[in-house]
Length: 177
Ligand code: DAT
Image 1 (cartoon, rainbow, N blue to C red):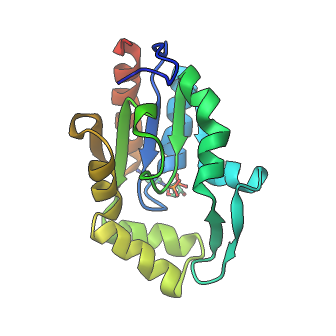
Image 2 (image 1 turned 180 degrees about the horizontal axis):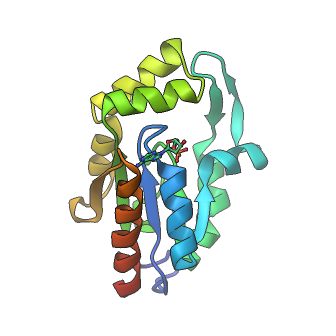
């Protein structure tokens, strides 16, 4: 499971933090990276910085990610290990990249407040709320990775962030290739 594509084991684990926008991926992933000294990779930022997209989607108000370009860009660092990847999708990454997949979950009324505060409205807001309500990301993660590496964690309150960071830090500390 923890083998790179050259057959060698990575010395540090790779984690994916996924979930609907607004569930706390970047807050959790960056705090975890700071606590563990692992590398934080925000795929959304990488897509913008390196132009790994096929233009702008007016309907959804976001870049149309080019999944092949993203995977090519990340392959070498993922083989190296020690990455915390943050993205609101997970089915296009190679399964072999990840040792743990965390899906953050937020109650709809709380997510509504976070997303409206972020300026989301109309279709963009309702699409994201429905995505969370119907557990789309959790289902995508369960369909794309071995069941035993996928964990859903609540991210409703500030204490949830520190609890999640603490338990994941412990998991990383005790992880062995
Ligand atoms: P994402 O990266 O999933 O889009 P974020 O980390 O940017 O989400 O968080 C969105 C906002 O919600 C941000 O203002 C921080 C806040 N937030 C995230 N997780 C939280 C939690 N568990 N409790 C309280 N606020 C949280």
